[in-house]
Amino acid sequence: MEKIITYDEENDILAIHKGFNKDEKFDGCIDVGDIILDLSTKGNIRGIEFLNATEILADYKITKEALSNLKKADFLAKGTKHGITIRIKFLINKKEIPALISMPIQN
Image 1 (cartoon, helix red, strand yellow):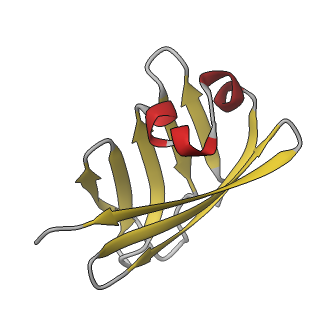
Image 2 (cartoon, helix red, strand yellow; image 1 turned 180 degrees about the horizontal axis):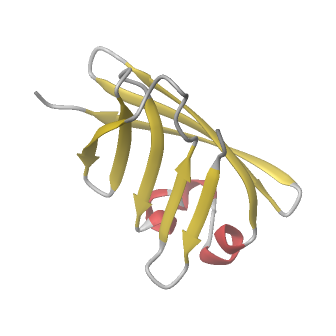
């Protein structure tokens, strides 16, 4: 399972995908504004896409230039009673930058 990290500077779209385990496949996605979460048949969040990424990550001072130099990123997404919390670690120019994003999910 290969992790894929892409950044489209022109459209400011960042995608981080962990790939799927052998016993799971893509099952759909959850759209939360400018964040799209890819779900597996096991109910796991396996990928995240950030539309307007620099706007979403502005609190962490992550710029288009920084995302263009992104070497590594990983995330842990966890469902809560009221939504989803995503913890992300970016490795940009040999510096680790943690980010925390909480999203309410409405039924």
